[in-house]
Image 1 (spheres, rainbow, N blue to C red):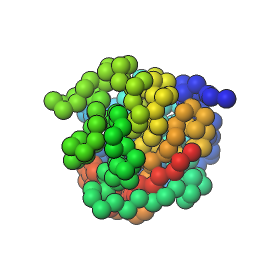
Image 2 (image 1 turned 180 degrees about the horizontal axis):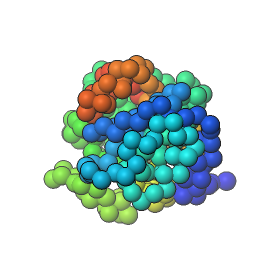
Image 3 (image 1 turned 60 degrees about the horizontal axis):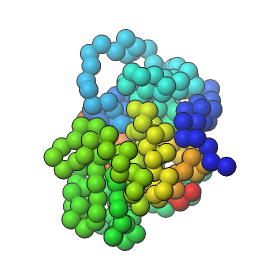
Image 4 (image 1 turned 30 degrees about the vertical axis):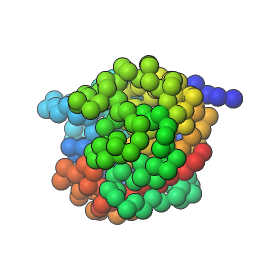
Length: 250
């Protein structure tokens, strides 16, 4: 029986109930890192701020106490909550090691699109989120990108109501969980093959019950290099230094 995608928030809180404590949180320009026994990642908000009231207080908090922050409408709280949830779930998830490592010939951050290219040629493809370098595939496939802050190549995210029900394939950034658009976007994509992707992906099998067909998340390959890259403002660079895309069909 299909579970309503809004239930993802209950699922994530239940799955991250642990006594593990935060050792470090880094909110980098592009990625936020939460270190406990292992590492959890989430994409950072794109609006900088100087007024976070809780900075300097998070180390030694329980991950389970930070996890509910995901439900906040404050983008920084929600980001820290998601990173904490991923630090609780992903380091010990058996799905990470069941998933196929992707070793692309081209850019490492585009490994998922390179892998699926033979399957999506001639199909109507919608990508939620503008991935750097994605334009190289726009010449080969019928691809539309939806963005909250669209450039001249993209459509605004409100176009999802019209395009997703007619799509054959949808590539959905897991940041949609954090900004709360996940339930509606998944609902609209039920006729498509749906790939949930990015370093923010939580490796949970239950996502299949919500309509997710593939998880394209990451495995942390070099923790210290990943930490340094994020702390030094790295974006797509993490795919060359500290993480590797992995793909699992649910």
